[in-house]
Length: 257
Image (cartoon, rainbow, N blue to C red; front, top):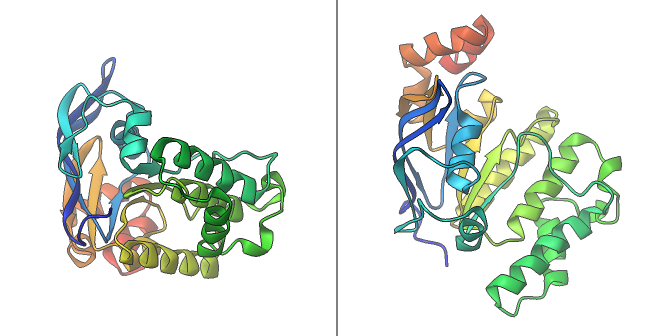
């Protein structure tokens, strides 16, 4: 069952991660509510994917706590967190390339039924999800033959087949053109409207500003700022951080580009 929209779903407190002498995350605090899209942005190398790995259980935190749906999951394994309702996509596309779009989603639906024992019909669920992500017409296409943007929708569908409560998306619009990105933003809005919590890492600032209710800015492993899109657009510290990846990015985050 999904929590009420706006209720805290993911609560991260004082998370630290070190790789030898590199301090990848420093005292990161974040709250991701149910029923909205929350954005996590920042320059390349800021620690965004490391943060995702910590939340999913793929990377151990050296300090800090992680709570999900009211319970402490700090010591849980990745598969246990997945069963609790955390799903993700990856910055580097991860799909079963030799399989069809439908079979990619069907695999995840089958796995979910086995652990959830909820009596669901994986075949019907796969068809429903393909319709949700707009891939019904390409259900029987081999994923390796698809453009990257469509393959990312397959990866999203596979994540949705686990019936998550929290969905972490790492650069999901990569490979999408402008119209496809707008359609994808509408999809995220619909998914969150059904109560799903979404945490979005994305370099497409226009998409981020359009769909996110709240943004966190990560820079050198620390939360530099947080607030509404309007607040982030006007934050001078954020604009300065984005100067590190070019003047155009700074103008975009300021809303003047």
